[in-house]
Image (cartoon, rainbow, N blue to C red; front, side, top):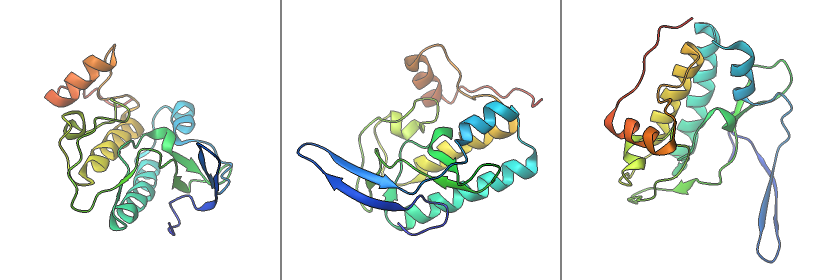
Length: 167
């Protein structure tokens, strides 16, 4: 992968039953931690973060990769105090060009309805997840905040979400 908003692989190491991928070092922390710290982003900060995330997802989709588990924790800042985000962790990613996918995976609060229904064939599920992330940045809350994963999955599939006023 060669995009400024996608973490670069630095090396691949293979052992008997394990494959390890070493990625570039980023020391600025997770987007998740920044959300915990700020609670709510300004529109300007949220727009910049969304732009970085959209660029990374556009790139991987162009390369034929669907991420399938985008969440706050999968975006890191490159350095302390920086606002430059990079996409990391491709553990659940898949090459998807022309393939129908039927696996429900990822984090239910971020997962698209079609992923939870196990019926998808494009990267549009990643755009849903980005929408959830942007709502968190601007509103400071999860749109699908249920007690259990099972309740969350039902709410996502039904489109039963919460729109609280920001701030």
